[in-house]
Length: 395
Ligand code: ATP
Ligand code: MG
Image 1 (cartoon, rainbow, N blue to C red):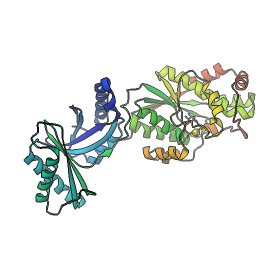
Image 2 (spheres, rainbow, N blue to C red):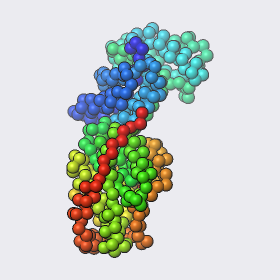
Image 3 (cartoon, rainbow, N blue to C red):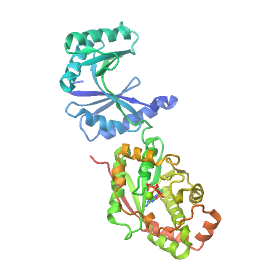
Image 4 (tube, helix red, strand yellow):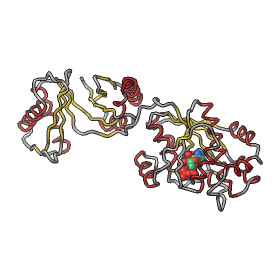
């Protein structure tokens, strides 16, 4: 296509969706269109099981591929050259493709792999590879064939309407296109875990909305900015995120004044869940999402999780439940939230932290302690003072 670069996008699991495949493919194409909308002149086309993106030549390839690789549902992307399905034309295009790589990267060795989707094409795959390899050797005198560890592995994919020549693949994250699995409300702290949990659910096709609890003035404005920074990074994957910001301080003060000290944390956590459930219902979220992880801290022992879970009726997704902390940290690094998460700002959970939190709370005992409080009024008041901020992906 004149003045445009071509990219082949492969979808991972989307391809397994049987009868619903066209729907998932359409959703994926829509998502890619959406992230490329800010650049003029991009096109997304579905053609016989392939997803093709055309972007203006002046847009750096890395930038285009970076954008596409963050779309959930994308397995890999290759910048490609499109030529007529004719051996002579393919040979010429392969030579100029390799000449460019010699200039750019100083490659010395190569190998050609061919695939023929169009079985009526008169040359079979092994012969295509051999003949294009020979054409490259003639056209690029500095190159040698290395079948084991080539500097460039060149793919030639012959199809009926045209042939694609391409080299490296850039991996995406896989998963499913956003919007194919409703919306979830993440309880977003400033920590390492909850952004990763939200990301994992978004990767399964879920739109994300967030609630954050603070204890202003015990927690700072800077801590709140950090949460917005985290949401902004997440928005780079799942589009704009609405954050409901709720001051938990009045509730914490009531708990401290009226309930046993060692139960403070678990009682606060139950309030967090209950308030989140209300917000989720109001905003069309089907589930709650937390970064909880069994055994990580006192409030996440199996017993504590049972008591926390009993606070709400809505399903609570805990995608990190069985991961080790090192794996969560690695994931945070991979998705780009880690450096922000480790900035040292106080969280509302660290305000009024009991000296010896109860690690094996019993639900009946906790319910009894809760009965000393006017839960409904406290929740209503917290919701009445909530603020909503929308964060957008960074350009
Ligand atoms: P994280 O790294 O996500 O902060 P954590 O190990 O510090 O996790 P906790 O502080 O016990 O764990 O919190 C468990 C989960 O509760 C968090 O992953 C998050 O989903 C939710 N949560 C904790 N604090 C807040 C908060 N201030 N606002 C909203 N949700 C919170
Ligand atoms: Mg936390």
